[in-house]
Length: 279
Image: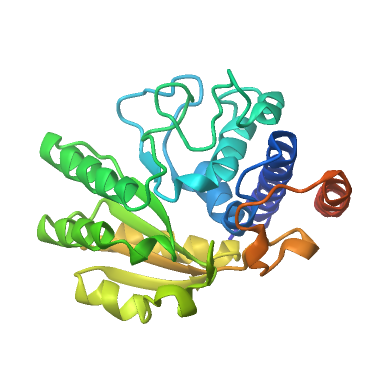
């Protein structure tokens, strides 16, 4: 990856993490862990990969992104805010009564959100339908869906995968954030979906298994998606809570907001990272 672009994306990913902490702290609720693990893919999608217009969120020919693991809205909102879809300052209103930034994405109120999600499994099904519609209309539109590894325990997810293979949706990219943890504990203990890569291949996908917190590996995976003649799956091995020392790989931070002391520690760490990148 070009060094200047990589630096820009690293800065963007750090800003996304700062927005996640800012929003969940002010909400006194939310899901920081799985939002933080996906910061690099949010940065890559909105910093390089996708075609969109922040000043025209409903642009007909935009690529579509569906956050199937809708509880990680703080990460998506932060990416959208830093790309100009709405003011960064509004992140502080997350989950507040009257705010348009609720705990799960709402396509009717949030500029840049392409599908309302939250009930796990349903987002990827909608995304597969969008990819099929783009094919039917002859549109050069790619559709991306981000799922959690806990989410793929849902049966509906695999029906969507079968649909994508049946209709040869080579414009459809499924991204699985495999951080190994879900609300009730380790995915391996709750309901293991492994081997995810072999199952995805059996369901008709071309698959890339990568370090999802590495921007160079993300670039290689998305380049492979563009060359594929099948629906594509990127299985990202990530660290839940990455970027905030005390949250990393800790299941308790799946759905808990930082208190004031924890907020200050997190923002100090992230500001130090940002200063280092901007130096």
